[in-house]
Image (tube, rainbow, N blue to C red; front, side, top):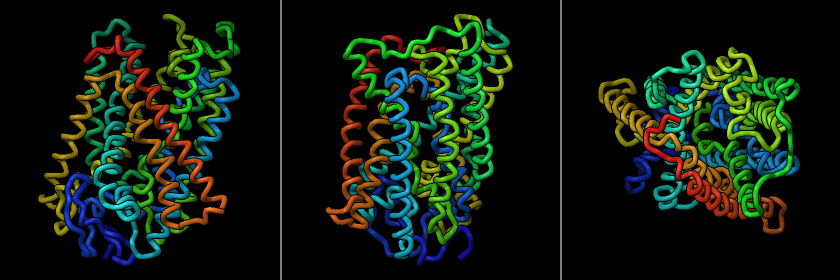
Length: 463
């Protein structure tokens, strides 16, 4: 049936569920809904999948990795960075195997909520998985203009230190660019943008690594201490906070939607895409984390870029800050465009008509309106709540960890029913159980941090 809609033996429709908030009775119609037909176009290769995966995971959040080492120390930081990588690679591969299994049975699942509905039941999809994923994706879309706006403001202040422009103005600029990117018709249409995004994140990670090593060897190098600071309570919550932050840096939350972009047959392609993604992770995460913590010790800031400035003195050339912030700014646009796709798909499912053409007026008008309004709302939130990263840490604990660490284990065990005597069953159970504890502890640590930082919060803040 062409490239936009695959045969009913390969695709499993979700006509019965117009978004997670609308309850329709199950349908046996083999036709795809508008979200699956127009946004989750299954035309990609495993390389394209690798680009999408990398952009969804590797982003400016890696600037926080040296800080996590100040909470965990050398041993704890390196071990958890390795362990979280191994667990998420394993977890994402399990999700892929479950998706491949259902595709071979003639019921290809294209979305996280499709998986939840088939495996756990429609209520799980409607009231838990769907809302969780929406929070993650819309939260990331809020974070995109915020991070981009801060990078743009930093560039502005490099050359106009007394300039009058405020942070919210830069956030609005980034929001306008995001609104344009939101109009790209499908996830597959991002493949070239995400290749560029992959190159950008490798490039600025290299800049950060070289910058840390340079500062660490320079005459201006700060004294380095690697002990964990704070009281016993601070240290304890710091460990949990560090574990939660690193877990979130590996999080995606949209693995089924990325696999949905693969052209059938899908078997084995996701594993190759994951190998591409984790090769980039290996090259970037460890170099930035280790070099940053080595250079600054327990004085490493919330982002490593902050450590390259001592008071008002730049420890690296001005062009270094200009290039690094430009690279981060551009990559943030790609990352935000990726996380727009599940929300775009949801709006398309609710407002689109799969019986009309993708670019018919019937579909173009609601598409442009819904996508533009959602990005405008996200931009307003970003400008109004510049302390949103603290809130996202809470969302990370309660949303990213369940979707990426717990549910893949549950889905695999229910689908394949491994023997309770098998290693697979107990590894999955251990990871799922341990991650459930991490949700609670990470959530408590995030709430505590919000309470501690609350006195510095102000709406439309300029910092």
